[in-house]
Every structure is written in C-alpha cells, then in structure tokens.
Image (tube, rainbow, N blue to C red; front, side):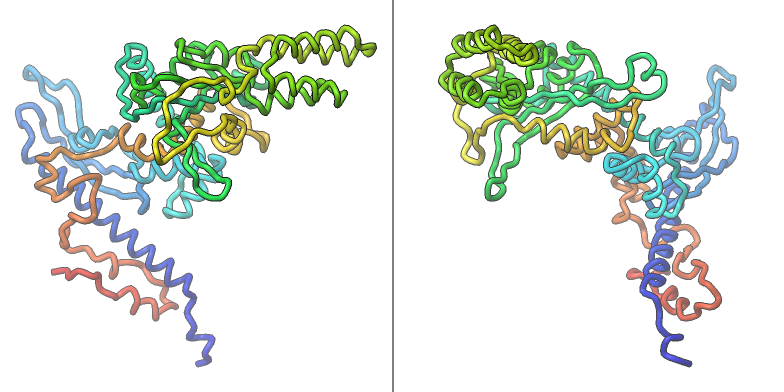
Length: 474
C-alpha cells in the first residue's frame, strides 16, 4: 500500500469528532429532559392532571435537533376536563414543538447583527448541522426585538416617575444624537415614502485612553428608533435612567447637527446644547467660497462674537451680485441663527463642571458620525437593504445593545430558562442544562462514541470513534 493511501485528512477527523461530540451531547439533553418529565409525572397533582400518554417533541440547539418525549395531561377542574397541558413545556416556558434553545437563539441573534438574515441562517446551519431558514432567523430577531422594546418602554415609564434603576454615578453626562436615512419596503414604503430617518442617540460619562491618540467612551448606552420625537425622547431618557443614577447628574451636554428634533429633545435646565463642530465647519466650507470671508467668519466664531458674525453674513448676502452665492450666505445665516445657542463649543463657555474621576477624562464631543456607522449604518445601510418600520426598529435595538456591550446580559435577563430549585436538585441541573452537573451515566448507558455511523471504507476511523470518554461509563 502506498503512503498516500494511508494518509488521513485532518478535516475528516475534526468533522467526525464534532459529530460524535454533538450526538453525545444531544443524548444527554434528551435523557435529562425525559427524566425531568418523569419526575413531574410522579409528583403532579393527580386530581388536577390526568395522564394522556407521551408525545414527541423537538428542540433545536447548538448541538443540533434534540428529540425527546414528554407527557401530555388532561386538566381537570370541578370534575370536568377543561384543557390539555405539557407540564415539562410549561416548566421550561415552551409551548408546542420545534423550539430554539437559548444558546442557539443567542447565536442567531449575534449572527444577524453581523450580516444579512440569509447569511446568518446559512452560517448557523453549517455550524450546528441543521436547517435554519432565514425566515426563522428573522422571526427570532423580531421576537427578541419586541421584548427589548417592552423593556425600554418599561424603563421610560420608570424614568418619567423618577424611579430609574440605574446605578452608575457621574456628575457629567455627555449625549450625542443624529439621524440616518434608511430605505423602506412594502406597505411602509407606500405610507412613508422611499426612505425614513432613524433617530440614534448615545450617552456616556467620559473617555479612557486605550493607545496613542485612541480613546474609548466609558459607560456608553445607545438607542435607535423610527418613532416620533416625543416617543424617542422618552425612550432615550429610559435607557439613560436604566444605566445611570440620574439624581447624581449635575450637568448634561447635548451635541447634534442642528436638526429640529434634536433641539426638541432637550430636557431640563441643566442641559447645554452644542452644535456639532464638524457640521458647523462643513456648513461654512459648503456655503462660503471666498477664503477671506470664510476666515473672518471662523475667527468671529472663535472669538465668540456671534451677533457680529451673523451681521457679517447678512452684509455679504446683500452685497453679493450672484443669486446663487446670495442664497448660500442666507442659508448659512439661517442655519447659524437657528442654532445660535450651540455655536460656542462647550469647552469654551467657561462652565464650572465636576471633575472627572482619575481613570477617565473629558474630551471634545463629536463622535456621533462614527457611532452612526458602527451602530446602524454598517449593518442596515447600503447593499440595497430595505426595511419595514417594525423590522428595522427591532434589529436596531439589538444593534445598540451589542455596540454598548449589553446584548448578552439583556438576552439573559429577558428570557432565561432556569428550572425550579426543587427539580434542579433532583435532576442535578443547576442552570440552563449545565453539563458540569450531568451524571456520568444516563438512561441505558447510550454511548455516542460507539453509535456514530462511520463509512465502511474508512475503517481507520473506527479506532478513533472507539476512544473512550474521559470519564468511565459503568
């Protein structure tokens, strides 16, 4: 036999090992669920629940589809049948068949935040060895997004009642807001037009240095939505109050591009508005072609001579002989007049503000353009992507949580399948099907290492598959 005939592809070994491990893991989960179902059957109130026999069910997991059986019961009340129930499904917060485990659901959500639903479904299918459709991935994102919406709405109600649960304490809070235009589809396209602006807001309490000329915002929170100004302000305040102890905030700075809805979102006397300096300078460059006039306007802004600067713009507009040039001067004059309150940067107003803590510093505001791209634009804009109002809102909520490192904790808090203690002690499961507490012998001693199908022409694989687990099976 030649040497090439004896060589083994490492990929084949890896695929086999994964298949064996996944199958063995599925058998453990199936055994645990069926054992728990049996304990529920024995300990149920027999006067209320009548045994109707076993029924099959399937739960999709990161290990593949797990098949198991659970008992169906009649529900008796006042001597008559009033319905049916699976006590195991009720205990786990599931109804019916074909559910997704929390780990698989979380994996799908993260993949959908990174790319298109179809690409996410394909990647998850390849990773788990089962068929996950893009529709299923979309449905999961919508369901989780709606629950996040309920959570944010609840936080907004608490914030309005000054009962926010936030614990982060800071004397200064920085807020930045902007909008991003996204393409619409379906009925929403007919109702609102080809596109609609999504409002985006972030808040943070400072920055820490991460490298040369590189800083990272601290304790950042974010929210995004297509909703009205009033609704968005309530949502934004709820998100802030859910993270920060707002009673400790002495002053708030709001940075924006001068849009009317951003100025309307100002809440409280301790909020100072600043016109984003990037947009301010961009407006000067776009509307003033004369270098000398441009320099004069910039110098007057720096000197905080706002009224004089507006007067110069008006004079230049009246003296201009070109209609187009005159319109540009007046456009800039109107823009600066409407945002007169925020023309002087926060750092040059002589405000007395609480000093930052030793581990952070205050920097000039103006990071919203970058955040618009990293939070929303990178995933939802471009590539001919189109959205419904609800579908866009649901995904945007998850993107905000991921970008602020809050996605994992939020997913866990929204829907965590934790079994009651009286059952966890008996089945040796402490939380979410923890493999660390699974007994070494389940059911009839099923051994996935020996049961895995191996191609007949690959006899050498049988030796690998025959490797015993790290623990002994008796």
